[in-house]
Image (cartoon, rainbow, N blue to C red):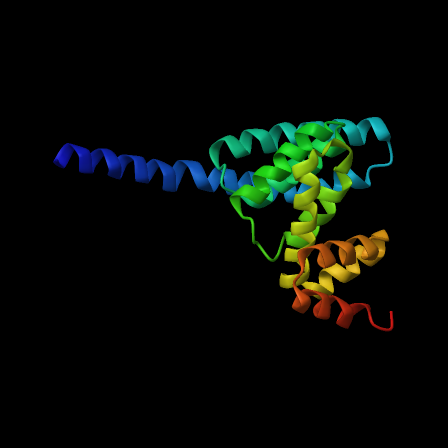
Length: 178
């Protein structure tokens, strides 16, 4: 019994001191570098920077796979490097790890929409669910994001299919007079 306790203690110490912190530090580094990579003027240099960041993010997720933001970032990086099916897979993982994260849901719905060319039937149905969650958790943010992209009609259609009158009321409150 004591040997088992020592084993679990060693695993816990390794997890606390040698796994999460380096992964968290790498996430912060990627977040700092990503805007510079996206702002690059040279297409080849930008593609190369995204490819390097994508590799780093994939390695990072191997040590910290329950990070929904890291999965969403990987989705973005895969999309920027031309891997739309891989981007959708990573976005699915972000959604699986944290399906109701209000801070991420509007962006996730937009990313899901951007990847519609590689969706299957169930994924198209899930798009409506994402819009519904986005309006439920962050109606203002969702309206602004959808309006910038010309997607307010798509959001409204998803809300109508969802059949929740309170969501339609919240949506109409933001769309009224705009």
